Image (cartoon, rainbow, N blue to C red; front, side, top):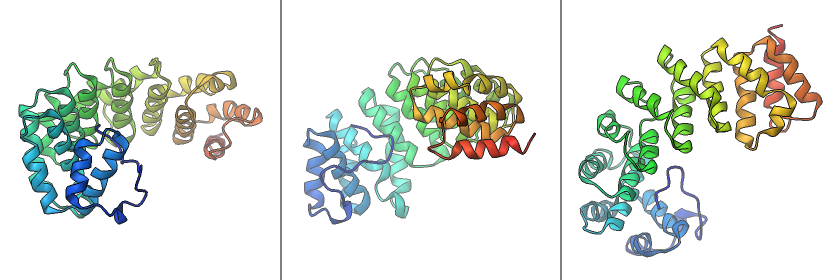
Length: 285
């Protein structure tokens, strides 16, 4: 049930007016078979940030039932987060769970929960799971290491950018290329390696990361990817937009002709990114 990103509303579109009590919401989180509705209940609990909910989650975190432990992690990850409440207590509990947990469903929930609780103490315990056999755990690890410039975290993301699982590779490449401002030869080389990834989104994230660092090795792959036929063959809108963003970011005049042909073919204009890329590459001519 673990959601790595913002919860999506289901039955209750306005969580602030949900009429259920905290006890009813907790019961729904534990027993609702529809994951979306269960997450609605958890999202309301997050928003309310009540001490009684924290205490319930603390108790559930040591339950013999793996589903109850998973729900505990899901709650603790964002309980009172916007107000800065329960930060220290939640991190301590989640790290304790991480050290003892064996169930991959629960481990995935814990790693994702820690990704919301930014604290450098989580880096080393998370990195210990970089070779975990379950890709959901490794994905949670990639989320949890977001934004840290410590060498241990960066090296783990570099390794995860070559992970067998496409979602793990994509997210780790995004973290290295976009979220991190750090610029090292090792990061650049990891991004270069992903320029030939089988996944088009991962390739485009690598291109953006290199363009952000003004690495000229991205220009030739961008020239090929921005040809009309290659651009049209892309299935993911995100990949198309990311390539245009990469072109705009590096602003190399060699890309102008390819971008102009895309414009003339009626491609890429809907998002407005193409015009920005044209303007930036034109200014370099």
